[in-house]
Amino acid sequence: MAAIIVHGGAGAVDDERRAACVAGCEAAARAGWARLEAGGSALDAVELAVRALEDDPEFNAGYGAVLNRDGVVEVDACVMVGERPAPRIGAVGAVPWLRHPVTLARRILEDGEHVLLVAEGALAFAREQGIVAESAATMVSPRARARFERHEGETARRMRTGDTVGACAIGADGRVAAATSTGGIPWKRPGRVGDTPLAGAGTWAEAGVGAASATGHGESIIRALMARVAIDRLRGGDAPDDAARAAVAELVRVGGDGGIILVGSDGRIGHHTSTSRMPWASVVDGARASGAEPRSGSDEPRS
Ligand code: ASP
Image (cartoon, rainbow, N blue to C red):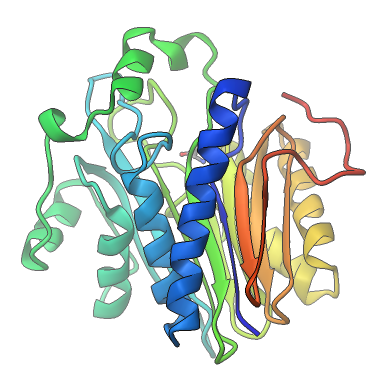
């Protein structure tokens, strides 16, 4: 049994963008699945899937990431692998002009000395690893520029999340992994770090239980420890969809909106969002599925 599910961010994806966002998720899920099928690890699969989404200008990650209020792209990312006695984690926060922060996060995981590096220190580690940062000339998508010029995040700060990306997978060896990558929220202060790179908030993976990647209002996701809530529910016996729903309910309880995807160590997947849409795609044992709306039978979307 192997499986992968990816998301393209919880938010109000409008009708014109829906197809492109779902297609981007499908392509990323297929790329991750191809790696799993070829015997690759869950970590390989989630990194590859997230890299594909970081290259896609529809999404707020890598190329396409939103600008902060100084006009700079600062990205956050995390990768986790469920292992005993403790998960392996690599994460980066507020790193300027990095196209593939998920890969830098993976290098931190593999290096093993630290869990989370931020800003200039993270860039110095990137350089040691042969990863070079980009610039405004190469990394600002037309959509990100337009959003910045409209000061979109300033006027409706809490609701303007969206287009963050993530992936969860289980490999043939039963190991689970999760990865999440984002430019954060539009019009954020320089140095702001959201939930994405914080283990237990935006991302969590636990051996023998499952892996989760969250999206939505980061400050609220941190307060809800959303990804960890989902995995705790899985451990307690919830089906993945129910665990996703419980984690979203906890996020809403603390005043936030957002969504989550997860894979259980039995290979079942789940997803849910409190927003009107969260593009997602999955491949479970070769069977593909995708969509953008919350699970049917769920509560009315809140935004
Ligand atoms: N969670 C991300 C953040 O707050 C935003 C998003 O999911 O769209 O940084």
